[in-house]
Length: 301
Image 1 (cartoon, rainbow, N blue to C red):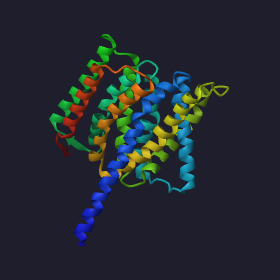
Image 2: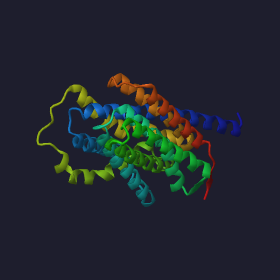
Image 3: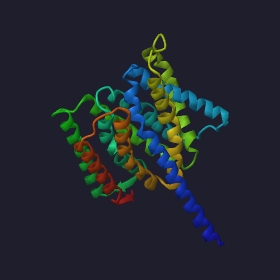
């Protein structure tokens, strides 16, 4: 086998691995909203939000010590800080707050624009120049989600919709910066260091969210809490960032198009939420716009 053929076979293998890892990450993240919705029904919302971050940070610390991970270089610190702000603090906090007032299926539709926001964040942070068509489609996607929120809120968006928008912006920031870092360091190390950077803040804020005694809740509720803390907050990013690094951010991030539909299916199965034709129609329309945006040209600035 020639050198060129071996290189092509190696690249094809990396692409397959990237897609498989990315799909595993998307599947993990798709259960986040339904699990959070179940958790906040019996546990205090602040305990769920900050508790999942703290437990994830403890797991990250154990991992970093166990593998004797090297310290990140100085150039990586701003990117890690941005990832920490986005997917360790921002997305968990605001998505948890949203699940107090809106259904998980509702959240799945609003967060359908997350791939679009991720593409915009990656373009801006990488100093790329999106075409006018990209911004036109992005604006249409945002307008579509706004119409859905107004329709479901009978003319007024719910407080949960604002929280979902903030969660979407946080997720986009964390995905873009973390995906870029995963090209140069292991994906699990990226989310581990991002979690660890947030730990001092979480400990300082402990008096605000740590209850005097362990809350009383069912086994299902605690299982959901552990899932969002260890699965959504930590393990899922190992799959996701590894997939972005191996298969390429642009290609693997398209797998996010599947996430809203998986969330809707999980919401119907776990929470018995009624999924009418309007919800599915808005989800499909939003995904269609995201697909169009992915085909728009993005040049280098």
